[in-house]
Image 1: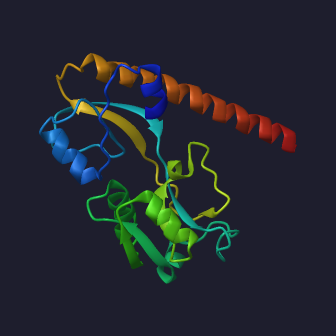
Image 2: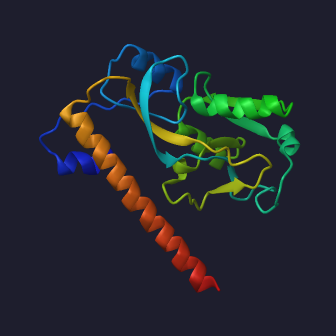
Length: 204
């Protein structure tokens, strides 16, 4: 979304930083940036926020994984699988660990990586399975190299939020981007839903 925005508004100078949940909350608490995009609302901060897109977390495995075609896989089956986790401080890891703790599940962590792309490549390379946002597969949620496992308790339902400190007046650039974000998400998701309905109709 950021690339097309910059093309639409070539005169705007945009600075974009990617970090984990913990790092973004630290920046938010100091009001270092115009706008923040997070999938987990920060606690103990006075903020304004707007949910704009669902962000489900799913279990990903290599396309040829033995569990790839099974249905309703019990959560406890994951105990036997090597896991690739995001680093401590990641919102994804926090959500996954919360579910595992609630269900009394302890998984074997083989790797900790700080990048979703690195995790996807590790999964494809057969190093283990992981839990990531469905959007790491693109907004369509599809991949010819990764399988989404049908595991009990998944997907974990979350949202993407646009966040800024409560009472803050957004800059013209930030407000323009925020409105563009809502517009583009609505357009893209409408297109995906339309394609899904068409595909279902053809398959009948």
